[in-house]
Length: 260
Image (cartoon, rainbow, N blue to C red; front, side):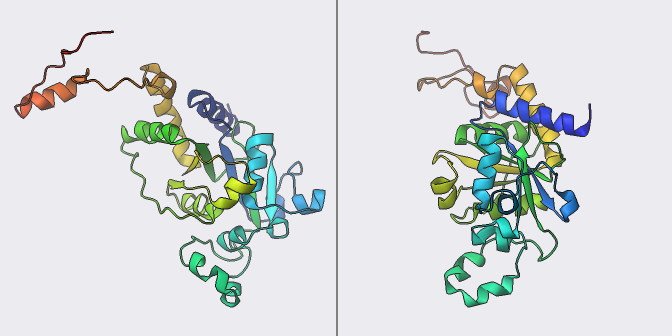
């Protein structure tokens, strides 16, 4: 199995085991034109139109398209600054941008010419990072399985603007992050108000998928989770009982309520 095949398999596994609405997205920063696959959609060249970056992600999520977004393809200011496609100094003349640009993470100007996205399960390139649109329960499960190997704590800024920046830039530097979809994603890219974005470097994918599989094998997967009625003295794992006995608390989990 090639590395690309392995990553495609990760995409399928995540989509199926987590019951995701859409495929995780493979994302790669483009350094030169040679990095752009011939089959990739380039909005300005191929359709003579423009997209916001969130809409390009949406085409990858919902239509399975590989989309290359260069400076000329963009119809929103966020990625132009965040991905270093234009100089930050340009913003000095625009008071409307000042507050947001104080907070938005940015890449070095000129390092990249654009960004490439595709569904992880069908991508024909090795990405720099993966973006997973999920609900909060699916996100909780991903962080929970990672917590068992010491990787479940995510320290991330939450900001309501430029999710295209917050979901990409930190993960490029090796930092998994959680991002709120911004108003543009909700209004123009078919992102639900119940969705949130989990981004992680590609190198972290093996641990995430292996842990998700391990939990599934133990019948502790996302699809196995049962929401029980609120009950006292619920059954607990053995280490709970040992801990409680050690500190002088009741370690017995024999229910005092009738079984249903």
